[in-house]
Length: 135
Image 1 (cartoon, rainbow, N blue to C red):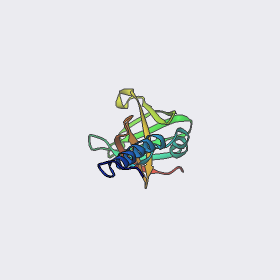
Image 2 (cartoon, rainbow, N blue to C red; image 1 turned 180 degrees about the vertical axis):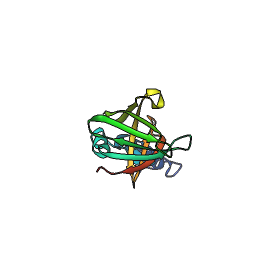
Image 3 (spheres, helix red, strand yellow; image 1 turned 90 degrees about the vertical axis):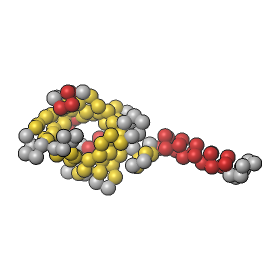
Image 4 (cartoon, helix red, strand yellow; image 1 turned 120 degrees about the vertical axis):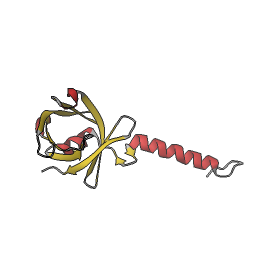
């Protein structure tokens, strides 16, 4: 191992660089490894996710075969919407017909221990939900 006059500072700096590179190359994030496009499709087809929206209302989303997306929200499932989902490279993209003003959103995906994490392009968690494995 190389050292400099400051002891192990060079080795420590190189370790940090290598960890950063490994993270970028391997898709590692603070919450776990991100899924590839093929892994996203396999993990989400015929699954449901559950969460609570910013208004405090529970919701459930179903990722159906063929890219169909169904969702219900509120304590009595009063709000219903449908949309579509697909993968672009290693991102999950989704668009609701009316929810979120029909805007397209694309996210990296991490699934660990029954939780699905949606990450932005800078690998920051934007939402986490309960995840139910494919049925």
